[in-house]
Image (cartoon, rainbow, N blue to C red; front, side, top):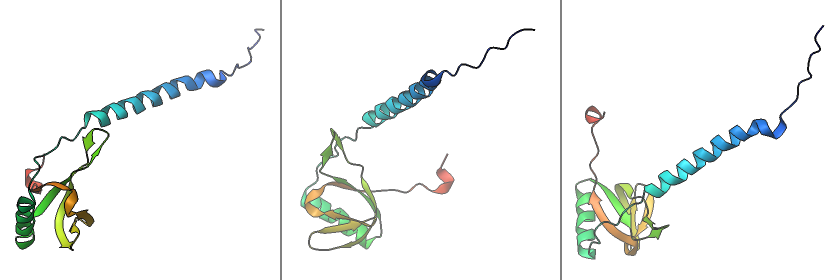
Length: 118
């Protein structure tokens, strides 16, 4: 009769594949984030910003606001939405408060119709 060999647990060795795949996914995610650098838009004057914001309020248009802040060599993602209010310090866009002195660019944002989506 042949003797059965007892099972030899590979311990940490069996987890190396898991760690490798997790590391690869993390590196890919970081690479994608670095590739997603947001470039600066044209810096508008106070008058241009005021004009666009006034039209957005009067005509109920959506806006996209780029802040004049750079984090890790990239500008922050635009704050988009309807202008829901304002005070002496700033405006409220999409539920977020934006100070007037932090605004770099404001532009009207068009919303794609559901029939035009892929």
